[in-house]
Length: 112
Image 1 (tube, rainbow, N blue to C red):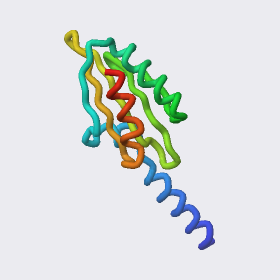
Image 2: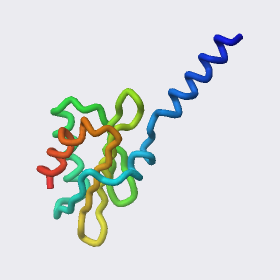
Image 3: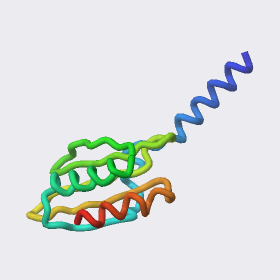
C-alpha cells in the first residue's frame, strides 16, 4: 500500500512539473520583433527553419495570428506567438529552458 501511495505522489509531482502553453507564454519574452510580413508568412518561415533544425513543435491558430509551441520531455519548452494588428505583425518568443534559446531565436530573427 505504501508503494502505491509513493508512486501516486511521484506521478502527481512529475505532472505538476510539466509546463503548459500559458505558463510559458506568460514568461518574459527572450525575443520580440515586428515585421511587415503577414502573421501567416512569418510563422511559416519560422516553422520551416525550426523543422530544418529537427525541433518538435506544433502550429496552432490564435486570435489574429498563430502560435508555434515547442514540446520537450517536461512539457512545453517555448511558445512563439505571432499576431497581426493594425497593419503590423508582432511576434514574441518565450522559453522555459535557456539551453534552447539561441537555437530557436536565430530563425525567428532571420525571418523578420
